[in-house]
Structure formats: C-alpha cells, structure tokens
Amino acid sequence: MLTREEFAAAQADAARRIRAAGIAITEAEERSVEVADFGLSRLRDEGAQILTLVSTQRLAAKVIVLLPNQTLPEHWHPPMGADPGKEETVRAVAGAPRLYLPGADSLREGFIPAGKEAAYTCRRECLLRPGEQMTLAPGTKHWLQAGPGGAVLFSFSTPARDILDLFSDPAVRRVTQVAPY
Image (cartoon, rainbow, N blue to C red; front, side):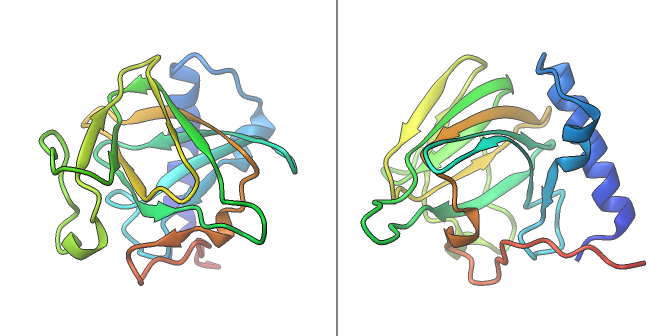
C-alpha cells in the first residue's frame, strides 16, 4: 500500500519526466497518471507510472514512466475469447530502458530485483535508445527496467485490458491501494 505522499510524489515526478521528454500534457492528464506499485509496496524498486492517452475498443496509447532503476514486473497479455491478446509496441522516448524477453540469457546492464529470481524468467536483454522500438506479439512474456536516469516510453497497442494481465510473481496485484490517511 502506498501513502498519499508517495503516490503524489510519484505522480508529480512522472509528469515532470514526461514534460522533460518533450511530451506536452495537460494538468488534468498530470492528475490522471496511474501510479502502479503492483501491490508490492516497493514502488521505487518495482512499479510504473502510466499515463493513458487513449484507450478504445480498437487501440490504446500510453506513456510509461520508469523512475531510476525501477522495474515493471514480468507479465504477459493473455488471450480473451477470440482475441489472441494485446499486441504492443514499446518505443523509447527518453532514458535507456531495457526490455527483457524470452530467449538466451544476455542480461548485462540490468538486474533482477533482490529475492525475485523466480519471478523474472525472461533474460534476453534488449537495450532501447530514444527513437528505438520493439513490437511484442500477443502473449509474449516481458518486463521493463530503467537505468539510473529513469526512462520514458510510449506503448502503442491493440485494446488494453490491464486488469487481465498475468504476472510471473504471484504476489502482484494489478490495482494499487493508497492509504486513506
């Protein structure tokens, strides 16, 4: 669970980083930045800040902000009925994000969060520089991590059903709780 102060600080930091990356956002959008700790209460280690720009029945566009060395936990977008799952293109805007996919272990720049080796099975490291992108097929396990300077990315996808995402870490809860006081 996050405190109100942690939530507000992460939201403001994300908005600052989005603007510093050259993406214009409104004050209303700044207030709508989702702060996701994935129920782990370790936001600075495992979490993400997400601004949804558009989400329709046909497409979604988001800005993902990762704070310095923050890891977005390993997950995948499962099929739902006849839909094969979300196809997603991740494009680096600022910083040097690392994307991890299934395949041969090439993890060099990043790290597995302490004590979480079993929850991070993808070890093929893909370094993205601003302007570089990768498209992930539906159902592809993946996770993201920022370097010491943080990262800002775009996520363009088929419809987003984030609440249905599956995570390798059984402790993950997709809905963040903020303390009422």
